[in-house]
Amino acid sequence: MTDQEAPRETDKNSSEKPLIVPKDLRYNCSGCGKCCGGWSIGMTEADWQKVKDVDWNSLHPDLEGLDLFVHREEAYKEGNSPYPHFTNPKPNGRCPFVVDDLCFIHSKLGAEAKPGTCQIFPYSFIETPTAIYAGVAYSSWAATMNQGDLLSDQIGMLEEHWQRTINHLKEKSKNIDLPSPGQKGESSNPFDIVTLTGDTTVPWKEYLYLDEKLQEHFRSAMNEKRYFLQTVLEGEEIVLEAVRLAKAGQSLEAITDYQPKVDLNTNAPESGINDSIIAMVYYLQLSFPAIRQHYPSLWFPATKSFDAKHFGTVVKRFNYLFRSGVSAILFKKPDLPGVGTHDLKKALHHKIAMFTPEMSQLFNRWIYMKIFAKTYFGPVAANYSVLCGYNSLVAKFLCAVLYTKSLAISRGKNAIELDDLHEAFVRLERAFFTVDQLLPQVGAALSFAYSIPKLCRPMVLSLHNSLEE
Ligand code: SF4
Image (tube, rainbow, N blue to C red):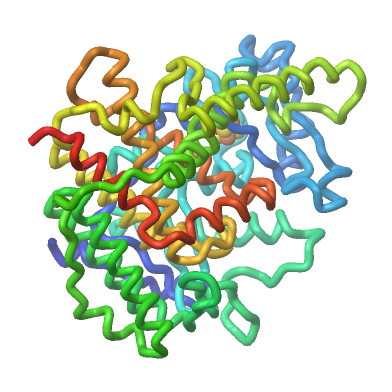
């Protein structure tokens, strides 16, 4: 590692807190246009004002006759919608403003006219009591593939994006009484007290010992391309040791010298409950978003306020989602449009070639990014505890591998493909973006399920046994 790659804390951002950027990670937009589909983009009133007077339909044949926006102003005022306006996806699920894989709003009016969400994407900025942590979501292909310049060499650009994020959040929450982001002071921060699990909490500065230990664990594993199934179970031991220390009333500083020990060659106990939880996560994170993308007519923001003529859509939606949910969760046979129905149990035990070092690097990189960016627990992750958040990451990793194994089985191949893994992570991250839009009951059910210590260990060991040396 060179000095230029070292982590840097900026001292010039308008907030009084430093902006901290992850080491060794790369990203630049590759302009592939693939990110501009699969969701309806929320727009603030300021976003809407910038584009509302343009006669978009007349400006390009691709936009002709399209219903470009959906308005939910009433629901927004009542607190039932995160935004007053949305873009309206085309029948193929893509944003209506994608023309030749580029954003037509950007081409016509400039980058500043795009919805704030698009300007910030795929960066995340999480404000904690001591600093702002920058991250990149793997819902972008270029981010998943680690393409571009080092983030630590792009501080100025990240500063600008953090400013945009502050402005966007202020605009978004105009009719809601929220503390202003980016200001240091007496006001409380949602990370002041961190829940490790259940009622075991620690102050933020104590949590930082665990955070630094996990970051270093996965960053070194990423750089050395260490076998991920070993590193992920070691990470779990680190989290559980932190819980043990906190429950014993000791400082988490002791975690710094802790050396986790994991034996991957122990027998993997079967667990129907764990299988069911993974099947539920698979349905929520992979099947359901794919169904939504494939059938935009069933999609929430694209559905205008209810009237009789939408009754058929509502029945169709309920029928399809119910059938696909039962098939995925009860019978472990999820359906993915374009992929078909596949058998998760068969995929788990199916013998397949060992992960390549590049695959382990991808897994370690993804989890390092999540831990660094603080997007795996707390306010942006359905208020999961740290243990819940960690288990949710392992569950999503398992879903990614089950998905790629299913694809390999369907092609008659004995190895999973790196490109399929990239696609799996893009799909998973898209659902991650909307985790705060889960029904509260679903969020609470997941939170309860993820609280089980060593939740995913039986499945990780089964997966290890299915990989051929
Ligand atoms: S508005 Fe532009 S940047 Fe945003 S999703 Fe649509 S095409 Fe992409």
